[in-house]
Length: 469
Image (cartoon, rainbow, N blue to C red; front, side, top):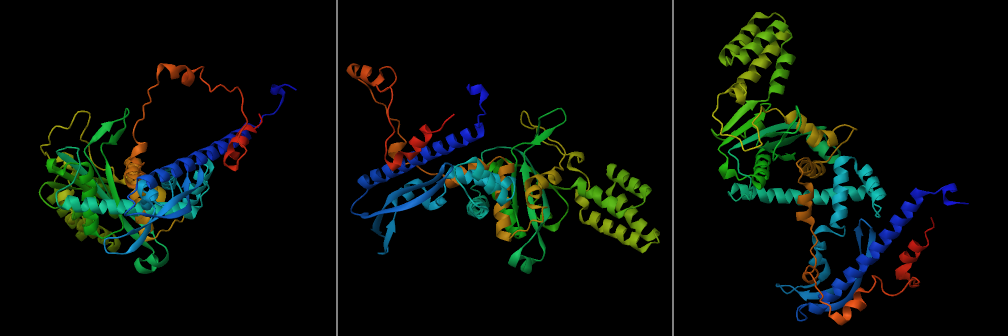
């Protein structure tokens, strides 16, 4: 029977080859790690580190679990305590990231930002040689999220001391803030109630055109957290100072729904507050039922006659007879009075703005409603999802990094594994004329065929050769 007449199980073939390649990779990883450990053992300071034998451990990688041996050493600390250390773990940074490789951690975090922990675990298990549980995915997110949180706190402290390391220079910075209510679980539900507001902030230096009628925010940064107002504002400033050179910013525009915690960011005359148009118009639709009243209110807003507008709403409260309607108009009057300085949009105030950088446009603010769904709502709302405060904070930090395209870069800086120095150097071997023919030859080692070794270490190679097409 010819091959074309047979039914080829290509899926099974692909799975078998993938598994064999993963086994091969695990064996190569084991050999490499153990050779690194031997090199560190030879080059260590023997007066400080005393060899105490070897111990087995396992590191989870995208290829599967790699079991290897590394040396444990006895040493004395500065205060005279006897401790045991693994020089290989310290050299690779495994004492900081745990026994999960950087690449696998990144894949788990990326998948967890896209969907539930259970779906993330299933996706990673299917696409790699490593099988993980949803609990393992949750733990990775918590660990990485906490590290990002510490990184943000350090950035906030630097910003407070005017030591931010942001490099982007801009004269104008746009900020938008809003809150989203997240359902809580467990002890946090008992402490805070059924839900708690998560504060969300974004900042950007303008927009750029990406389509005929499409624009995207440029150099966007984001921050989200459940914490108190003061801490959140400091964290937000730290996130901004990591990207922007804040000393060059001369004007800030703040867009929000008028909540007191948002108005708290209006620290001086360089910050211009604007009441978010979406929330402003929603308030008019909610509290004013009469179409003619609505039209008159919108017209006064357009004409920028704010004092006349407030007097008009106050007159309406005294003229209507229905008690519910009067209460609604009073609520609108209070809302507009408290945010009087933000009723006129920033782009209609006649402010003298500097010219935007090439390729960037200054457009109207009001992107927060879309961003709060993209950043937080799409992942953390719905599906009857409930969160602890710490768990929600950890995931929210990663979601903000993902939405601003900084997740991979941040994970690399926080969970990088460093190779021992000798493996980072480029090795160049110069062949003498007499050795060139023997080393280069016809491109192979002289054997037309060979049998696979029979030791257990090379079972993966025999399995690969046994695959039948």
